[in-house]
Image (cartoon, rainbow, N blue to C red; front, side, top):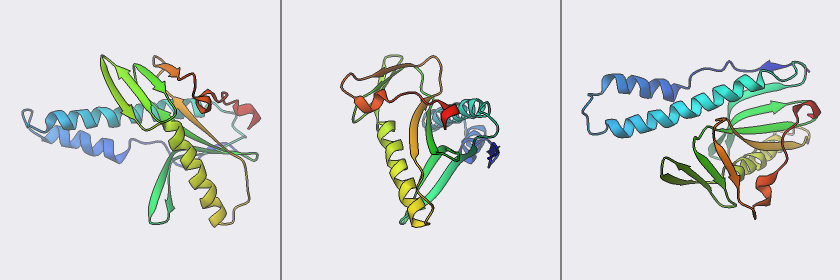
Length: 181
């Protein structure tokens, strides 16, 4: 197997669109703060995926196919995977998170604390597990042979403090060793 990125990593359309909107909207427009916040979130996600993309490019060249921003149909909807690594032995789903500050992973939620602001999100480990189940069903639907599917949430901001709640066993999953995959 060769190492290949199936799609070149580019700036997402949503980031380009919101940047264009910010260039056109009046500086004192009442919606500008909301648009600035959305732009900040989209840029952060893009930079996190760009950082993850860099580290994936360092993997052994002969071991993986790497698919970025994969969108697959399920029933009348879609699900999206940040990065999908395919090797002869397994498939690996990676979900990148680029939050700064502190992330506290609990069984049913992710708590993000930064600059005295606390936000609650869906637990990304639960989300990527759901993507694993959906991908498994999708592969079965197209009669693609059974292959082990692993899943990981990758915190891409090196200055982020990560705390796993002591009673949350799934959050303590071992680190990925790409050489064995």
